Length: 195
Image (cartoon, rainbow, N blue to C red; front, side, top):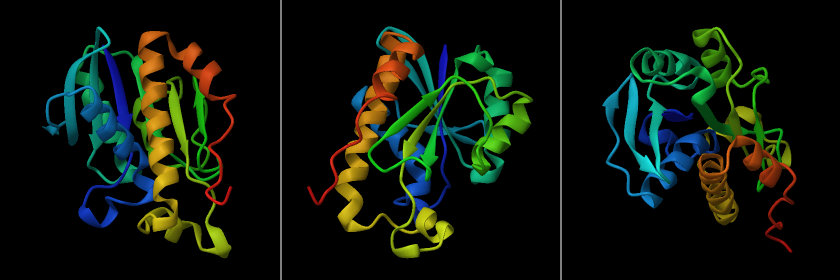
């Protein structure tokens, strides 16, 4: 079994914010593959089904970002999943909007959700897919950028980036994580809106 974990914050006030890119990517993946509706489980929202011949679970922790590890650890206690079978999907300000970065393992890079998962699992040896949301424009404060609604001018770009993330998850299932890394890490970022 594979477990895709999307990071975000619960509640309507956070639903359309860049920090919830992990939730948004999993929602798109579930809709595209017609998975059953998410249901409350593992201190999160959980859906499970067959995708491209694989048993896949989708988990959106509802613990708030900085406690995401509690939900992931609960899922791993119950599901037939090893740490290496977990793929965490989350936002990354240090990657330009329109670009993805996949890594097999690594530190948290200052991301509180990832930090919580590493602490809860006692390991950083799990794959992750970072969705570029870019740094705030016009010198805005980073927290405001993460937790404010996506600006209308940036919606189309974020939507296209989320579509790329869904494609990367599919490639990881169909061809393996290495193939997804090779295909998406070197990919040119989406064209800027002004072009």
